Amino acid sequence: MKIKMLSALIALIALCGCSRMPTNPIKGNAVIDWVDFIKLNGNSYYASWEMVIQNPNLVTHEVVGEVKFKVADVVTNPGYITKDGDAAFLEIGTKLYRVEGYEVNEMIAAKDETRIGGYRLFLEDGFAPKVRRSYKDVPKDKVEKIELYQLEETTPYKTLAGGDKERFIQLLDSGKDTPNYTPQNRERDPTYYHMVFYTGEPIANAFTIADDGTNVFFSPWDTRIVDPQIRMLLQP
Image 1 (tube, helix red, strand yellow):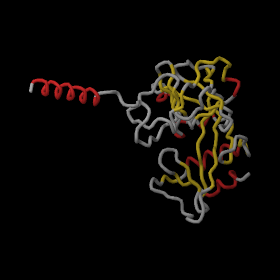
Image 2 (cartoon, helix red, strand yellow):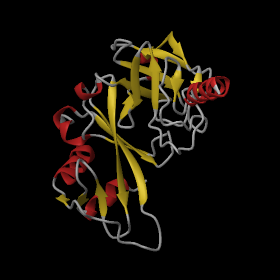
Image 3 (spheres, one colour):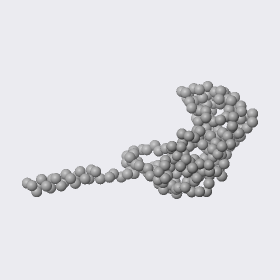
Image 4 (tube, helix red, strand yellow):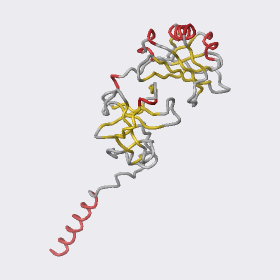
């Protein structure tokens, strides 16, 4: 009887031990919607879609890190803890560079030919709130020029300066805020453009503006409908 009880106890301990065995840290059953991040030197960096390098030469040749592991489409365990060298979407082996005028623990860059300026900029999480990223914060009196781009293009189709630049800004600023606006043309998607504001600083600010055939609108914070006269300036 004692032997049977001892055997049962050993079996129970074995089962409990198995239940505490570590699970696969990568594989799980979750579909994870990753943000575009990099982990480097204990810091988390996130891609900024509102920032464009004013001069690609400001990205130095100094390599400050390299992507070791791409988590997207691989990690499905929601409990996965990111580590140095992890990136959401950058390929393994991608070099990370220092940007002139910024500390490595503030901003880094990765080559990306699909981005205006040829680089994707990443802001360290704690530094990001200190950087101007909203249209309302752009110093309009310091804007030197505005470049306009077709969606997914990296070469501007038009550059606004002088009176055209001033008129463009005036039309943007005088638009009507319409927070719940939805595109009016149900038959086709709106036409999207990128507008990049250069103020002479190392980093330019990029925003999206759209034309749905009925209205032209953008989102300085909430959606704003702009006077249709702006189409004259948006046209190639």
